[in-house]
Image 1: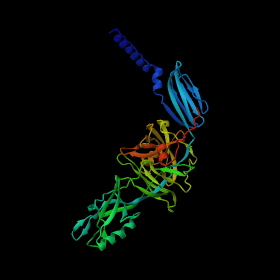
Image 2: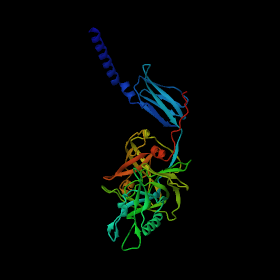
Image 3: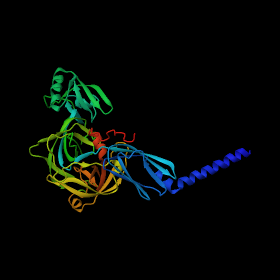
Image 4: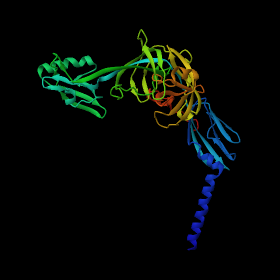
Amino acid sequence: MKSELFRKLIGGILLVSLISLIFFQPMREYVNIPKSVTVFEGDDFSFQKAAPVTATLKSNSNITLEQEKNKVSFKANENGKNEMLLEFAGIPIKKVDVNVLKDFRVIPGGQSIGVKLNTVGVLVVGHHLVNTEDGKKSPGEIAGIKVGDIITEINGNKIEKMTDVAPYVQTAGQEGKSLDMMISRENGKVRTKLTPLKDKGEDTYKLGLYIRDSAAGIGTMTFIHPDSKKYGALGHVISDMDTKQPIVVEDGQIVRSTVTSIEKGSNGDPGEKLARFSSDREVVGNIKKNSPFGIFGQINKELKNGIMDKAIPIALSHQVKEGPAKILTVVNNDKVEEFNVEIVSTIPQKFPATKGLVIKVTDPKLLEKTGGIVQGMSGSPIIQNGKLIGAVTHVFVNDPTSGYGVHIEWMLNEAGINIYDVPKNKAS
């Protein structure tokens, strides 16, 4: 009985001690310090600490450590791994892994670009009724083909563009045969039979489908990697205007474009940049990927913005801070300009995700010209403290002065650019 009472007493004392320790100032602050920190060469990092807590490095080979009464800071001098040990009264309380990545830089964009996407196969954007002798029917709908489907093969032959389709349709109609159709759908591939029907007012046979093999629009260049010539633009996926589905890209091209006018945004109406492709329609790059983070490929012609054409560092998502920033974009002809914005909130994401930033336009000139963020501004690079941190993606429909942004590290990842080189272990 006495031993049980003694155990309970000891347990109570330990619990109270633990709670007291948690609420003790040094312990509260150390709990908020991350277990690992990733920075680039040349970056500084600091965190607050209580006076009795001291920090030591496993190795001094790649990091310079400084300690003040209430702050620990270090400068990353060279890529590599290290460990920082935090101690309280000589007792280790936390280990922080420090990863220093190689210096990495890209050239910010801001240029207005024209975008042309060529789909994989032909995209079904609607059904239409064929006026036959037996009434109005849609062969495509009868065959179970849906809006958003992509026709990739007919009778075992690859379909790449709309003009590939017509000969098969007419031949099958005249011979009274069905077409063997291979359809690509969001959840996989589907094979179906479609029998073309003849419109009684015409001599041609029809599928009863509206189809499209390409899409065009405008957007903004976000970055160019000077070594690989890889680029990222738009910051969001391109969807078909009719089906609202992401366009599955076979390939595509980007060209220079010129902004001709602006439809100013207002509450409930986000506004739009009106632009045209350059008169010579010179292709300046290809498009290899259309993803939730934008379009990606390689440029093959020089593409300058005229105000910031040298490569600058980037910031990882955890390095972005709330506060002032700038965007580069075009609102008149092809002139890239710099405008002030505010980072309202930022999420230090550990895994790729869209909508990592909320920004608000604060520049009077841009507000007067556009009302805030408008369609066509997607992809405009966001720069904070001399670093590229992300791209503008979406506008808030009910507040055109504000919108979302995506962190730049996820766009670089989608472009196939590895910024996370495995560092040499300096601490070993």
